[in-house]
Image: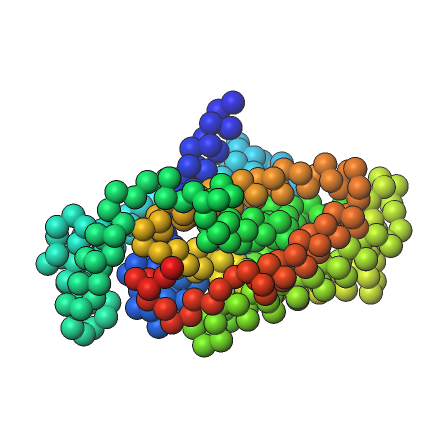
Length: 362
């Protein structure tokens, strides 16, 4: 119970950060750079994932090849994996004390001089017109409540778009690769140490592709990246599903990949991460931070982030049962199906937001 309690406390902290960060970045960034700055959140996330994977790999290597073996001070290696999270958490807390407050918040609380100072640092030019724009939108959104999100079908259409983006980002199964990657590769014949090393390589791929998104998101727009990513994920997930479905089974009933099939599976898995990394990973966070008008942005972002974490839990919690019941082939076919849905969802429903000011969003 103690383990569950502290995981819950940590989850609350991560949930708050995931809802607040995209809104803060969107509010403090110039329109022409907002996509790149918004992508930095995803870069931070994937860098953290990579460091965690590398840390876990090194700890297991020091321990002799297993997370269940004792490492230091009589504690098992898996406990040190959790304790390794403390330094970055403290660093995050201290760093948060040093960043400037959102200019929209400052103006809303009557601290206009401070807001002007922050805007000058960000925009580097006359900010009086920007301040007046913010004042006008603050008047419009005064008295906003959760009821403003409602519409004919429960929520207004733009809220449903945000929820759709949040849920589809998770339903393509990306966190299965990161949560169960080591277990997955062990189940198809790799050693525990090699499986952890594969997850480290996957983390590097994730970082590189997020840098690709940062370079192109304000040049080509949000929709093209999402569409290209959806198509690439569908192909790579479909190939993984085919390989797992047609692989011979070992004595434990797991697919046994070897030779060319194992190499193809590794390439496909990393191609999948590559396609997610330059598209649905960073772009969804950028869109959630900028697609809503000022009146509902904070509430809508909280709702979208909440839906994202619920979908994350559903996918990660269901994966072991799905694999046991249906096998890896059918499970990855389901993720490929949602990748296909995500393509048409973006093509016909999502609007482009590149270059628009937050005050102009409708």
